[in-house]
Amino acid sequence: MEEESRILAEVAAAHDVVISVLQWGVMPEEAISVENRAERLNEEMLIRRIRDGEHELFYELIRPYERRVYSTAFAILRNEADAEDVAQEAILKAFKHIRQFRAEARFSTWLIQITVNEARMRRRKEHVEIMQPIVDHQDDEGNYVPRDFADWREIPSETLERSEVRQKLAEALASLGQKYREVFVLRDMQHLSIEETAKTLGVSTASVKTRLLRARLMLRDLLAPGLGGSWSSKLSFAKGTKPW
Amino acid sequence: MVVTCEQVWHELSNYLDGEVSPEVRVAMDEHLRGCQKCSAVLDGTRNVIGLYGEDRMFEPPQGFSQRLHKRLEENMPRQRGTAFGWMVAVAAALLIVGSFEIGDSSAFVGPQLRSEHAQPGTGVPPEMMVVVAEDGKLFHAGAGCPLLHDKAHLRTMTTSEARREGYTPCVRCMKQYLNESAGLEKDDDDDGEFASSASVGK
Ligand SMILES: [Zn+2]
Ligand SMILES: [Zn+2]
Image (cartoon, rainbow over all chains, first blue to last red):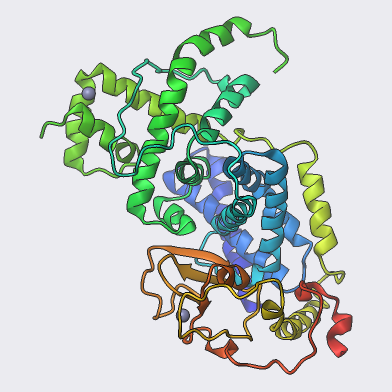
């Protein structure tokens, strides 16, 4: 209980800072981290109360992460039905094991780690790789040489709202080999640090860096000719004629 | 320091992540100013990171959240509020002990043990989260275990998953579970943690 009131006081103090920042209209650099801190303390308290039996607070705890869990599972499994099932399993597992969550880690990172394990197990169970990776014949060691030097300077801000662009991005990602896809998903889509990515996947930070470089360059090769040129001009022509 | 196009491509990712030395950064900046090819690759790679980093990339299907909450609801214990919190905790503790032996009686038909000297460790809860090192033979209660040498290549999983992959319990940090007979009735419910407190009495 003492612990709880300490956390409450810290949350309140952090919120005060955020509020005063908002009122005065200044946004010093620390403000963002203060907000994160408030969030984290709030999360800490939620977890404590869930452990103490207020299970329904679990919904509140995971709400901000539901989509992330799903998209991580989808990026690894490349299939909506499997991704949904794995996302449910992972979140359920997090609930069952909430007592084992250690506060040194971020809850979101822990949750993503469980999701990756769950997704990997699902893949192992299914044995066969349904879609063969297109660009996985290179080894980690060799240098990757970009194949295309198309200029791709600007992204129109509405690009992602176009479902066909999202479709292209999904296809490009799906065509990468598993080890590149996993690293890219954790690092560039889920914004884990290099260390967290390494820990989640059970590989060294050096391999994370090598695979990440390759994944990014391969994706650029796959997307730059289209998004930098033909697709975007076609898209701007189609603008206004589609509901999205 | 002068860098070539190949060197720029090789360090591009680290450059974007701020993982290159100031010296390399200056050399790369210098190269990028004069090289159209490399700056096209850099811009494109930056765009890739920006696009995929958006939260909207993979939208869950319609009704995802509702189905998830329904599934959670089905798996939550019935008690609500803090009043019963301690009872639930006691029940959970007892039931975890009760379910210790399930791991070995269930579906895993003798995996190849990674270590010849391994002890089966019949008392380890099958759903407990443990860590393993890729090249190790043992699973551990936490990354802090002194017998865990390769701390750079850790994975987290449940004990039953670890067993399936051939890992065995660490004699140091999992000691409390080894050769321990729980002395309680076995509970058929794999999710013993969630059973109602009514079963505490049995
Ligand atoms: Zn160049
Ligand atoms: Zn150990």
